[in-house]
Each structure stands twice: as structure tokens, then as C-alpha cells.
Length: 178
Picture 1: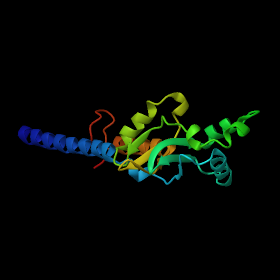
Picture 2: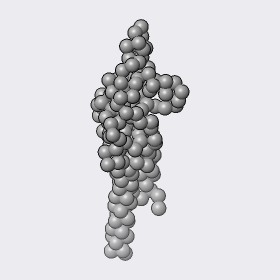
Picture 3: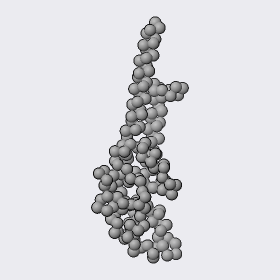
Picture 4: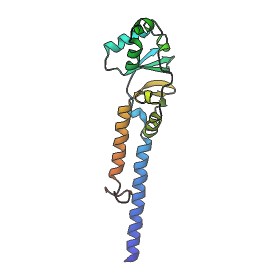
């Protein structure tokens, strides 16, 4: 009886290990491309006034990706452009500038196959002023869209909750759900 008990316990441990590895694999292998949404792309010589007017006509747009021959070189968020265009002389000083003079060239860009958990970690390492800026997603170094911090956090939380459902609360090992 003792030998049978030991064999059963060993088999349960193997199943738990497999489930733990599976849940870790799911979390670390979910690519950011599955969260990617389209974004308006503008060339570096686009005038700031045209981008600003586009934002006014499309209030749901988060920003634009500034590209040069399809390759992202910067981003412009609506909020940051509005700040640059405000004030006593902001509009007059900036309306005829190329968007390349107002863009943020220190943006976060990731390959479309990068795992969500890695992108999330990279995003949280950014300075506070850029913490909630969208992330540019690329394929062959060309912009294919963006992922928002909101979507990134929602998916990361969903994956962690899903993994936690399979863990025993006392041991932290898999085996809670069969």
C-alpha cells in the first residue's frame, strides 16, 4: 500500500510540474502582435498643423507614428502635441514646423513576436513622463501598429489570473483545477 501511495504521489507531482510549465509557457509565449491595433503613420516632413487637425477630426486617435520610409523614427501623442500647441505662442511657433521637430524619438518599439510579459516589463522601466505612452509594434523593423498600456496590463493580469487558477493556494503548485 505504501508503494502504491508513493507512486500515486510521484504521478501527481509529475502532472503538477507539467501544468506549472504549461502555465508559465502560456504567459511567456503570448506575442504582443495579438494585442496590436492600427495607428496612423505620418512622414517626418508632415506639418504639425496637419497632424493637429487630424487629431481634432479623430478624437479617439491616441497618437501617430512618425515614419521614414516605413521605419518608425518617433511618436506624437495627442496630449503632448496639444501641450506644445498651447500657451501664448505655442500654436504660432509650431504650426508650420515639420512633425519631426515635435516628435518623441525616445519611444519604445518592440518586434511583433516579443512576449507580452517582456513588453510589460520593458514598458514599466520607462521614465514616468513616458510610462503611459503607447508602444510601437514592428515587423521587419517597419511599424505595423501599436499596443496600449491598458491592453498590455489587461492581458498580463488575465494571464496571471489564469495561471493562478491552476495553482494550489497552500503550495503554489499546479493541481487546483483538473
